[in-house]
Length: 616
Image (cartoon, rainbow, N blue to C red):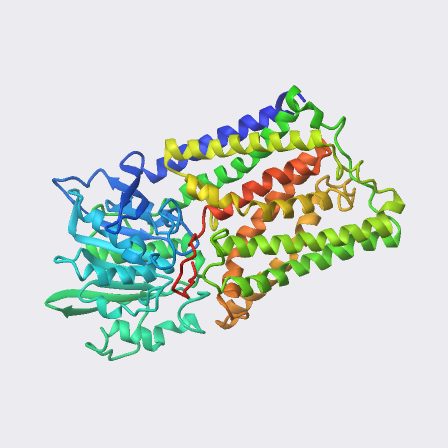
């Protein structure tokens, strides 16, 4: 193909958009060059390696030290999920340190016996800020989301052991003052400013009716300073309750945004509350209204980058099919869909499995997570419970699809002309070897783009709960252990959706209609359950499905899982149409999805003494 229709052209477009994404996100993150952003690595007092992002605005100098805030992500996350808070604090003149907790991101991977040492490394992040001459050591704040907030409470206890405590203010985000090991730290707050962002539709915290948390005993205990200053009227959301503790003026506040637990990663309201709190507690260095927020612009650039980056893999592989090296993989002409069955038996074989398997996807997703996620770890071979549970679910669904496909082929398809070799399910060893080589080359180039953007711009590609970020060699090797789960799933799925389910259904009206229909019905069960859970939650204030951690967090994980399914199906179909080979797309997408999944979650080795396993 020539000109704008060529794969080379669209590959170039995608690469340019990735560059624009990095430049744009960096410009916003650095506040037009007024904030220096640096990736750090340091050792805790216990000798564990920590990583994080440091934001230093121009106003923070040894002559004019600035207040600072440590922002901590939650379980199954990494520091990039706090970027909206980091950006807004830094542009207001605060120094910000956003660490990866132990077992997350690029920080060291430990076992359960040592995971919570040093408050999962949060205490060392506070100590690090306390050694910088451009930081005002009397104005250091701490905020954490979910498990990061829980461990922030543990950091208070350690801070109290310092000869001169460093933490002046703490804000819990979708969390509370009880740490991951069940220790209550409300008594460790002391004279510090303290606040809670109690999300009204939180999946994990604030009781069975989270939107009424303000009227709970926990809220009363918090606002009344453990009964030292009893409330004289019903507590009010957003009101600061002041007191004098140990001779110091202080205040406490509870905010209650009408959002879910993970929406804090995507909420201007929560960011506004965070700004208001630290402005009150620490004093804003640069005057900016809380409503003045630019992080959505950075998010828009990162979203552009995420979509463009996914298409780098597709367009690069398509481009390689036009080269001599991989010419043997290219089909003589674009592979056409099968005629949509006109006989009733054929229609039933298309629609019934599609609908039933789609509904079963959702039911099995929650059932498998219910059985697995409640356990703290499985094995040192697969030390990520989230990745293992989703991987097992993907394999179970794929095996069911394979069984349906085999029954279809032997009872109907073979007799009506469905040919396994003609549709690419059976290929030669040479073509399989070339397919593996092309997939490896595509993955190296695609992830090379990601690492380049990270190196030059200190940013990544992400949208809401979906994030693609770099990884170290240790995490890469662990991630590769999970590849067989997703590889098996993606291969089976690609063979099936590009076989009997690749028909010309309504293609005269819209050529991609078949793919959209197949995607829709495969995520249908997940969508129905998700809508039911949050529709009921929003209407009544109670969770419709309220059981183990696996069930509760399953509704959060559905979002990236649906995204991964879309990526998998689009990649499989697009590459199949040009090659007639269902394995190329499956090989690429399985590793791509595995690395996205495994590099953005919690890794804990066996050797555990704790039974805790907490949410985001």
